[in-house]
Each structure stands twice: as C-alpha cells, then as structure tokens.
Length: 316
Image (cartoon, rainbow, N blue to C red; front, side, top):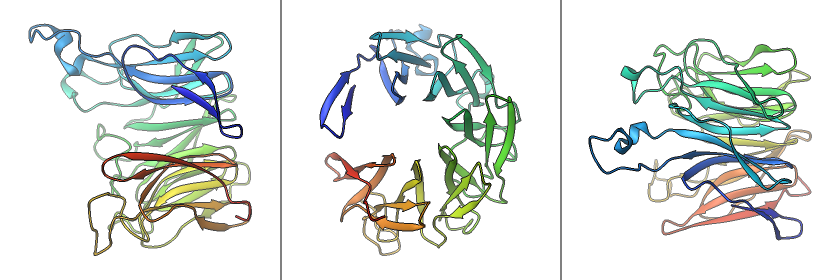
C-alpha cells in the first residue's frame, strides 16, 4: 500500500501489508489500519481450515513512525470495516453471532484504545450495527434496533429496512440518536461536527435516497439533496460533502435504467455556503473519499478502473 502526498505528488510511505487477502483500510497521521482475511490453508474437505466460513477477518495496525505492524484482533470471529481517529479504532464485530445463524451475522461496534490495548463493546442495543465512523471523540454508525429481523445484514440499501443513525461520545460513554426517521437512514460518514448519510424518508418506495447532513454542535439538519433521484455513499471532509449521483444516468456500467444510460456523477456540496457543483465527466463515476481540499473517485470503464483525485473547486 502506498501513501501519497497529493500536494507534492510523491510517495510518502510504502506500507507492508500482511500476507493475507486484505480489504477495508483507514489511516491518520500516525497509523494505518486494515482488516485482513486468511486464505484457506488446506484443500482437504475434512479439514476445518478448508471451509471459507472458518476464515475470519482480523484488524491490523501499522505504526508509521516505528515501521511496525501489530495484530489487534486474533480470534474465531469477523472484525471488519476499521476506522481510526487519534489513538482510537472502531470496527464491525460478529462475535455475538451464533453458529446456527451463519451466514447471517450479528454485527456490533467495538471501540479499541491503542494506548491501553483495551477494547469495548459500544453498541449494545438489539439488531445489527454497521458502518462505523469516528472523529473528534465521537463514533457514528448505522443502527438496526428498529429493524424487524434482528439478524438482517446491516448496511444494505433497502429503503424499508428501517435502520437509524446513532452516535457515541467516548469521553462521556453515552449513546445518542442522530436520525430515526420512519424509513431507512444509513451509510453514515463523519467529519466533526458534520454527520452525513443516505436518507430514504423522502422516497421510501423508489430506492431514491437523498443526502442529509447534521451538525453535532448546533443540531442543525441540512437537506443536501431533496428530489426523486438516487444519491448514495456520501462522504464528508470538513464542510465539504461528496456523493455519487444518478440525475444524469445510472451507476451500473452496463445497465440502462428508465431509459437513462450509465453516466453517474460525483457532486460536491459546501455546507458553509450551501453551494453544489458536479466535478466528474461523462462516464460512470463513483465517489471514493473527500477532504476539505481533495475529492477522490473511481471511473468505471468496464474493462478497467481509473482513479481520479481533484481539488475541491475554490468557488464552491
């Protein structure tokens, strides 16, 4: 894995990954964190290690200053989707899953203190809890306590799968609701004080999510989009929101939807000035990440992907 300085357009660090298949990573100025899965080590059908269901994800941490890799979890359960802020990690964990429930998993959110090596379950309500994000001492996740099926997989974009958005204050150890609409609220992202998510309450039957933002300090709700178009996977950095938008075409590279050709876009929105702008071109573009100054997105050309990184427009 390479870390790049976008201002200088040069590699800052080559991070040696674990000798497993890996996915889902995050980083800050001090650490890189990722989830990795062991590859089955046996082809013998009688050997439990040949069963892919027994191959579980674990969390790994790389110290940029020390140049060392540390394994954070090492058990018989899945730990995935890690996020990092300061010396805290959060991840999705399925240790509450019963064997007879597999492949359905009971996901919960765990918090880990790198300095002390202590971990803590922070989402204790019933149902699935997924997609955790963390910033400035606050954890936010998609919460399934009001979903009828207690082991329905969290994170799925099913409008009537009535998930909510909840938060947790690390300092006070208190949980609090953020979005609890009648229909689905999901796929959150956080850049303190802003939380953004997919909001299906305006169009619950047409799979057409809007993007909504909430300020944790002022408790102001901002409807970033409000229409019958599908908008998804919002990302926020500082006061800039970016998302994948289907107003000019679909997000599937080979599928026409309602007569529209594949041509999704990446839009950005300035929460301070309430201004929106499209930044991508004429292909299927899918948002990847955003900071106050940069937006990263993928361009799907069917045969291969290209990754683009653009500066956030100064006149946004």
